[in-house]
Image (cartoon, rainbow, N blue to C red; front, side, top):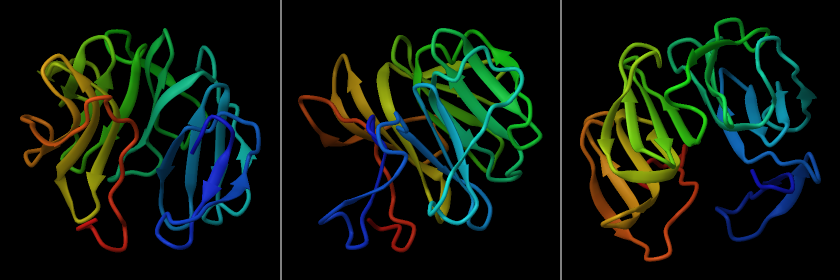
Length: 206
């Protein structure tokens, strides 16, 4: 997902071709059940039912705008979705994006990285505050690390293992948590900082 549309690689990232949504800011990608994939970004919210081959715009009720900087799907219920709307807060849908409701203004307005875990917790990378964690569906939050995470990725075969990529006052690069985002440690130092990060679905060692 990029600021200029979606690109696809079939050789492990060695080469890329434009896939869809040319010219649209589709910077977030989130998988749902079966072949369902969501993309969201600056004034973009779209859904694919065929693994990303075709896309349909989604215009739900309840969102103040479609300027969505963070997006996540609940792994326990693919009908439950979370959207971090720029300058507004965190919103939740329980009906597959037919409607959304406000969950928190405390977290969401400056969130880019967003992840929902199997234990019911939610992680958010707030650029103004740091890595935040919620255990009640996003209504209340605790700061776990002063690190401005632009990307979060949950390991496919172990939802307690999470990567966070971004910048902090003491370190920049990639952090790793093995306890569902409660504690973090640096695993890759990148002086300039890092952005989106992902695990390989086919080989979670990558």
